[in-house]
Length: 227
Image (tube, rainbow, N blue to C red; front, top):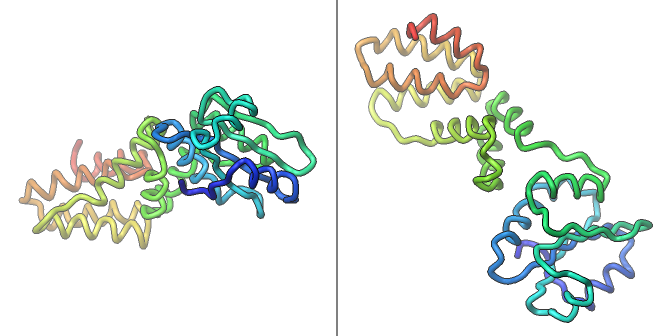
């Protein structure tokens, strides 16, 4: 587990003596939904209020405690904040359900992955975009925005050689330094320079298609590749 493991006694000590917010995940061994919940919490953990303790308890090791706590299925998520009654989330471990629970229990606002991805794509911050995608499950990335984000990262990471390598490198380096419109302009220059190379043409069209600004892509396609 990525979180601090606790037993029932140490958990009671934390809840009784700590003047801080506690987020507890109850899990079992070999529980795929538990691992998915852990990944969701890890994704948002940097947004938690300062001093929040994130801990985990293995229900397989403490079945009597789980029974006394009324936990009939895992994963289960507890938020205990000073001055408020503890609240539980069980059953709904979807990204949306967990996000709403954390926002309500911790009084914070968490950005949707789509919004984060669009901001990273627009800024050309592909390292941050790839880090975000790595934290998401396949189910979480089924939206059109995140599918485009995956295509962009995949295209950035593709291995090419020869003239195509030059085109690929110039495109992404230009995008990182000057923005997507400048990258499209450089593609135009390269298409003119290597006008007889069908491989360069095919790659240039594929690269243009991952640019986040769809209007700019359409203008570029009409002006420079007649498609």
